[in-house]
Image (cartoon, rainbow, N blue to C red; front, side, top):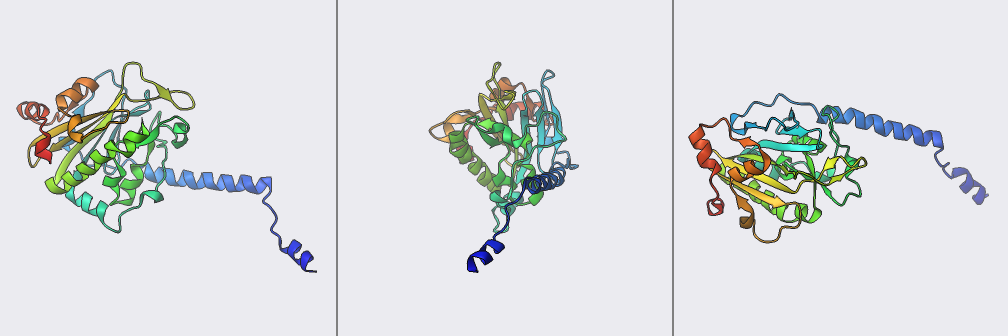
Length: 275
């Protein structure tokens, strides 16, 4: 009798039709979420973040809540990501109530041509490397979600992503707290014949990555270039000028500033000023 009761109470395994329904339900949920993440907000134009891309560079400019992404549909990675990082943003990101990374997933932005799917990096040997880091965006649910959109990602070597690139991002986070405001530009440096990943081998793998910092209150600037491989040693070793980043990318930064100020800032490279 007990054996019969157990048999009776045993749950029936879901059939093929039930599995299909569950899969469709998950797809519907994802379809409902993504438009919320990819809403291209009316971000206030910050003149200090203005830049000029070279004419030949394929680009779609996307304004999210806290980020401006210059996306290249041909390379399927951003040309550059620009944002202002303030001490208020840092305080919100560091608060106990801040968003947790584990609660956010990677998503494609369906409104951006050429944007990869989150799964396109699988088994490629590269991680999805945030250009604007999650640690800066944790203070707001929407900005955190938007920084996980694939428009903000590049194929990045895992050890670089986990180690020295992350160390630099942590320093920038602290510098913004100290200096009140930082204009941050970050993105890839792509060679003439880059490697590619993805199911269709059409996502460009950068040779290197750059970060540019401009502190308007202190009128100082610095840039960094890290090769897309493990980069041992101190962050000081990777400091350079904005002029050097411009030479390697073709992008003209800080274009809203008077020419004399722009030229002066773009020649600066003094890591000791940022200690």
